[in-house]
Length: 258
Image (tube, rainbow, N blue to C red; front, side):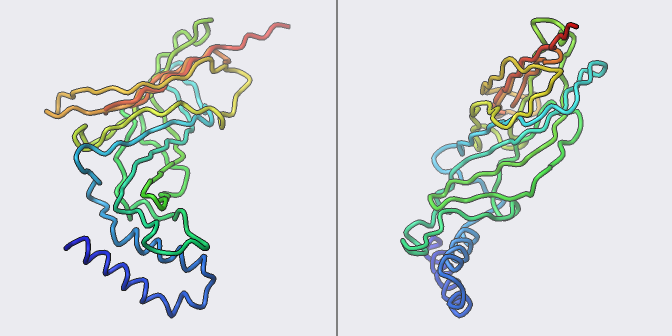
């Protein structure tokens, strides 16, 4: 009954817009109707759990390394942290719009939808958001949230001047949502957008998922760990995330000889 009433409300909402959308191109009208449908089914405070936890793929696309602080053993990076999951209730294909000028995806403010509360466990300062807080929903119910962030975290950099390099680990995972609610998996570490620098060499980047228990809580948490290995003036940094993912970057220094 609840599903029927919500669907009926979405249809009524679409009819309410007829007088407005009949004066705009069909493609715009389809976008309008798709957004109305998604919002009518969206519950920002309720994860789309069904028979098990919500599978969330979390990936890290490194774009730049802004600071390597060997005194404090801290690394500051700029990265796109991608989140992908599916909410079947948001799928509108075959429900609104037609085959002509079909709307395949819509963009909505983050606060309008449920989004996993993934954080950097080993950050030393609050991460800085560098992009609009928008979420993309596809016609099949797949949801993408990809914030561009500045993240500063702890990393032992004592070997950054050696051939072995320093390994830095960034851990990312849910803050309040345990593995019964959200199960994160580590996507491949992406370096396509990485802006390399003359002083450091990124020699390795990996990711791993973990399931761990914290002292605070009875439930297990799933997180990703991202490892980066880098040589000094090319160095290494590791770690990413609750079921948790780990991204690893290996860097080393580029020695220059005259």
